[in-house]
Image 1 (cartoon, rainbow over the protein chains, first blue to last red):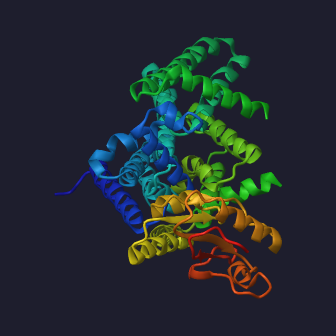
Image 2: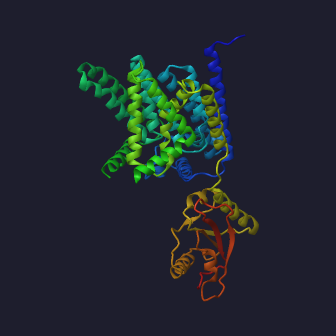
Length: 247
Length: 244
C-alpha cells in the first residue's frame, strides 16, 4: 500500500519525536551529577514539600511551577531529580511538536516543518536542557508553542488563538519570567501599524487586550492552583521587576 | 565588552555547525523573498520577536549561556528552510552537509563532557570514609565554592567557609578559628580546597617552623577543571581544638 505524502510525514514526525525522546532519555541516564541551579531548585522543592511556599521559597525569586511539579510528581517517580528530569524530557517532546507547527505556519511546507522537528530533536543544547532539572526546558517549549499560536492567530485572524497564545505565554512565565517580554512584543506589533492606519487600531487593541488578559489569568490561576499566595508572590515579583528596571 | 560576551554566548548555545545552517538558511530566505511572502504579517511578528530578543540578550546580557537558548526558536525554522529550499545550491551537497551536522549534533548530545566529575569523586570519598571508619561525627568545611552541590551529593552537612586566605599566616589563623569554634570538640575535621598553582594542602602540612602538623591529604581529584585546578580533601585528626 502506498502511503499518501501527508501520512508519510506524520509517520516521520512520530519517528522524529521518538528519536528526540530517546536521545533525551539517554542523556539523562548518562548525566550523574547535578548543576548548581539544579541543586538549588531541588533543595527548594524539598523544603516546599516539608513546609509551605513562604517558608521554603519566600526569599527566592524563582518562578515556582517547576518546583511545584517536581514536588507533586515525586511520589510517582520516587525522587525529586527523577521527577524533574522526566518532566523536562516531556518538555523536549513538546518542543519538537511546537517547532514542527511553528515552521509549518511560517513556511507552509510540511517537509520543512519535519526538518525543523528533526533539528529540534537533535540539537545538543536542547537535549542537554531537557535532560536536567532546569526551568529552561519547559520555558522554551511553551514559548515555541505560544509563538506558533500567535502566528496562527495572525494568519487566521482568530480571537481564540490569541487567547491560547496568551495562556501559553502566561504559563511559560511561571517557568521563566523573560517570557513576559512577549507581552511587550505583541503590544508593539499590534499598535505600531495603528500609527499609519487608524483603522488598524481597534482590531489591534482587541487582540492585544485578549492576549494580555489570557496571560494574566493563566498566571494568577496557576499560582492559585499550585498553592502560592498570589498577593505575596505578586508583590515580590513586582519589586523584583522594579529593582531590575531601576538598576 | 558585555555585548561581545553576549554574542559569544549566543554562538555557543546555538552550536557552531548548527549556526552555519541558520545563517545560510536566512541568507537564502532573504535572497528568494526580496518581496515579503504572502503571510507577511506573521513574518513581521516573527522578525519583531527575533530582533527584540536578540537586542535584549545583547544589551542586558546574562551570566549563563543557557539563557540564550530561546534563540533556537527563530534559528531552527531557517536552518530547516535551507534543507528544503536550497535555491541554486547543489542539492546533494546541502543534503550531505545537513546529514553530517545532524550526526555531529547527536554525537555532541550523547557525549557530555564530564568536567565536573570531581563533585561526585569528593562525595564518594566522604561516604567511603564514613562507611570504612564507622564515624558518626564528621565536620566538613568547604573552601571550594561548591558547597551546595557537595551537600546534595554527599548527604553531609558541608559548611561553606568562603575563600581561603591568601597569606599563609592568615590562613593558619583562619583554619585555627574554624576548628576552635566547633561546637562539638569530637570527630574528624575535613577541609575541601580547590588548588590552582599553589599547593595548599602541602603548604598546610609544612607550616609551623617545619614541625609536622597532624594533617593528611586524603584525596586529590583526578579530573581537573577547565582552568587546570583540582580538588583536595585534607583531614585534621584529633578531638581538641588545635594549637598551631
